[in-house]
Amino acid sequence: MVEMVNRPYASAFEAYAVKNPDVLCLSADLTSSCEIDGFRDRHPDQFLSLGMAEQNMMSFAGGLGLAGYRPFLHSFGVFLYRRPYDQLMASVAYPRRKVRLMGFLPGITTPGGMTHQAIEDVAVMRSIPNMSILETGDATEVESICEAADSIDGPVYCRVLRGSVPRLFDSPIKVGEMRELSHGADILVVTSGIATEEALRARDALSKAGVSIRHLHIHTIKPFNEQALLDHIGSVSKGVVVLENHVITGGVGSLVAEIMADNGVGKPLVRLGLKDTYAHGGSRPYLMKYYGLDAGALVRGIEHILGASTGIDEQALASARVEAVHSAVKAEAL
Image 1 (cartoon, helix red, strand yellow):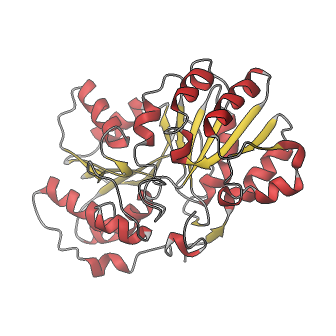
Image 2 (tube, helix red, strand yellow; image 1 turned 60 degrees about the horizontal axis):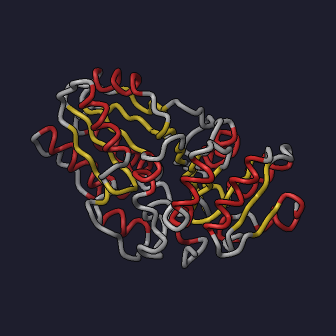
């Protein structure tokens, strides 16, 4: 039985910030939605509300960084790069300020539709010089994201899960590393964020079907351990499948493709994620199935590389789900 942790970010941020008085909590009118309302009430001296004005908040954070503070900006991911892009570049990334961008509702973890779904954030942030990127995949990583982000000398963007989050791992994020979750020799599966849970759902069924899976979970997208990935690719015989909560252009799949191309690796690669489309509203499991980001899509991607059917159906995968609908805690996810 997988442990479900309610609002792990709320307690983790408060515990970290109270020990570090140079950490300031900034909100852009989404305080309770980003689980920092309790911190606001208990620690008003470390809290600043900038209102629904993300461009101003970003420039303000750059100034705080210049003054020696380490501001943690809290908003939905889309509002930390789409709306204030120019200020992000000029006031934060270019001068390498220690600004920590805590982006909630990554990808299709919200039924709020395209205005609230950060589906191209990794692609955008990867292209920005000096920017680091971390992504949480379970409660333990959410609990360790503040310390991990604050260890980086420069700006960092974090994809943060909220609400009721499963605990999949027993060790915190170590920046620059990756988690090796299984050690198979046929197919390398690379996942990040909520896609890792889907891969875990599929692994037992794949093993019973005689497919040996080597599984990597990526929490540090930039900087990335290129040599470690190449070693893992070299350890499998058939090919690589990447599953991510993002468009397939510019995300982790593109990162893997770039590394393989740069190093002359000729093994097959399948990239699974949103395919040049925006997502509509709906529950997380529905959206993952509809857009091909779930365990079933992963099985089909593996079958494509193998050139054969595994015989795994939806019934075999349904019993392995470890998390309830993400919107159960906040029905509208806003």
